[in-house]
Image (cartoon, rainbow over all chains, first blue to last red; front, side):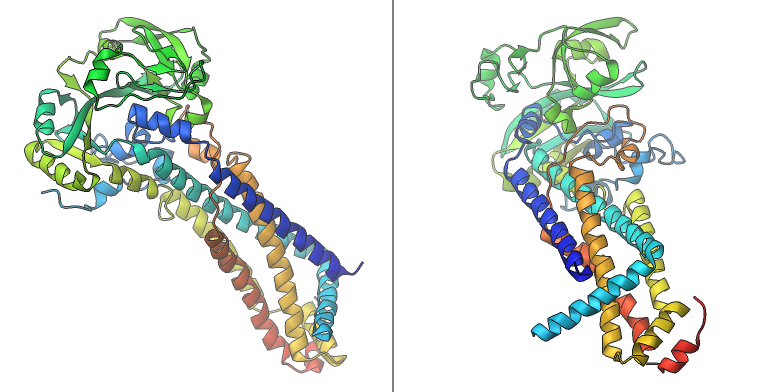
Length: 100
Length: 416
């Protein structure tokens, strides 16, 4: 078999596989499995995802004190690894509405 | 047209044979290239999906949370302020919330302890009836029912807990086990685990412990006149900003947090400007720049000689450029598709195995969760233009320079 034919076959196989994965993505998104979780959020009034449980300002990012990351004193620099994945909550750095 | 296709296939045949002659070098290049695409695609899939999942999960979080601040820190909220908020026009209900943290020295983990709103009911009831939620605004129903919360038909009663999967894992506990807590006054309080929250909800409930109001107050010594904060719901969602402004004016020591802020906080999480993200992103871009630099800075003596021979046997400049185009396309397309497929499997089938240790950080209660795949064509197109196009262009430019020189000069270079 010619090398170009082999190349096009392998490329076609990769494209078909990617296409199947995209079909899997759209099927998964159309059959949401987060309904139970969304129900839990609504019933319990939860506000945050449980991604980083190291500190209160990483566990509840949206409820964090306004003075984080300087939690305890001005030289207490952010030292939790999760701090490197997150930006300060929106509300801390800018106002989107004038509240006064 | 058929002739043109045949010609391109012959050029491609020749290109692939030429690539296979330098197997080790080109295979190494392909693996490295696919790895860069894999890292970038994994990052893109993971961040997009978690943001999307957060926005879907948290869309029903409380409309406004009002905290009390003292000396810049979150303080307990006095119940007497609830009336002030209730009197604001447009406020539908004010729900006091009791929640806090407990550090478990045995597991080295922080738990979130929460008192569920009275009368709430979640989970799949054993009787297979539909899940019924009580209306939080319906005070009559709240008092008519028992002041307890039900999960999968298990009632939350004084002395019992409903815990998240992460917490159960960390303490190796199961339903029916007892769990001791050290109360604020040093006394040990023991609670029986009545139920464990489902693993599907781990993304929001891994570290959660639900307990009754009486037990919560007993554990932390919180006076009956205080709660942690309050959740405010409004009649008209368009009035949220107005109600929030009124709360700020009436209670200057309070801090209202609206649902939109919560959603935007999670929209900015894993932003590419965030620390770790920019490190990964710049490492990948730098590796790519080295690739492109290697290609654009010139050809090896062997490649130059090959071009000289091809031109001497009658190949035209355009044929040489086409050959190099196919070389770039063969490597970059194979690397792109392999990288994207592997990234999809990594993020959505293996639970981001490679990212997990970094994401876990210091937390012992990292949730086990499967992200719902949200992949858009826009993401794939962006990735394609970031990786395939620059590489193919970087391959062609030096070739054009080399292909225009005299074949005799090109062949006089010896060695590789």
